[in-house]
Image 1 (cartoon, rainbow, N blue to C red):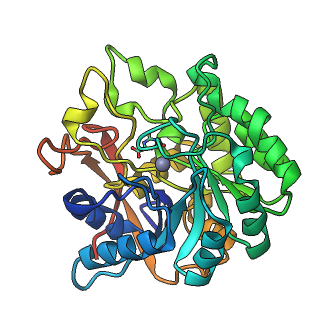
Image 2: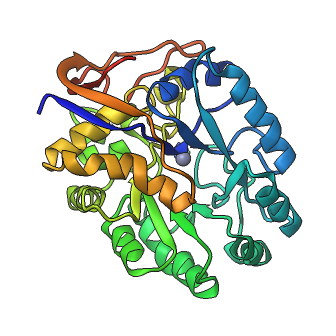
Length: 344
Ligand code: DOR
Ligand code: ZN
């Protein structure tokens, strides 16, 4: 096969940042994706419908002339989120979900939830008005090993949450373990996004010949057996698994540091990375539904009608792209790729 034409995809989990950083990365996403679920972990986070409306206006103002892109907004859940804000969010039409970060779990999560049960009144209303909950599914307990944080979150918090709110529609974001795959398969009203890095790499790559900060994200990469199960889930044709890059730009100097930030930058070339992953599993025929159908179906939005074409040709991922003061290193920089999206 030399050409692969698919419906234009959407990114169901994206960190766009704000200001100059956003202006640098937004064109990369727009090249490939028609819509994206925009993460609310700014400093300070997007906590109200008014915050989301203003952020959405800034994103729309940064769309290059002549390009189409729809930002789908989210609210950042805190211990103090008011159920009335949920009603207003649903009524706004542009807020499509609410994001849960455990306090302290990752970048800009200081305002996150300290105890998930504190939000039960909010979850009750979200269940009622049919607004999805997006989970950063990791515990933050100091005594839990960093590689076990997703598994423990599922047992300790997610299972009880789904028992309390069986009709609450949940996306377990950026899943990394077979435990997550099994839980999603076995439970109603839950789906999962999968990133390119978790489909392509196991944790070995973090230490290949030295420490490699540009592969460091949260949840951290896991063992190869987990990667294989994620790849199997993504290519299985099960609509519970769909594309969400978790592309999270940090300037080079914040990644290459004695205490480097978590986040992989994949918005530059996400669809090509996913194509490589699906080809490695002999499942190119399953790419379109994963990238372009199951996400809108879960969010109860129309599928895109435009198409994109991927062509079999070799090219090298650049070492760096311009970004703030120190540049941005794309995921798998320097790697030779076999698929490239045709420019229109
Ligand atoms: O690696 C990550 N980076 N994981 C997250 O959950 C947040 C993200 C970011 O915002 O940089
Ligand atoms: Zn994220």
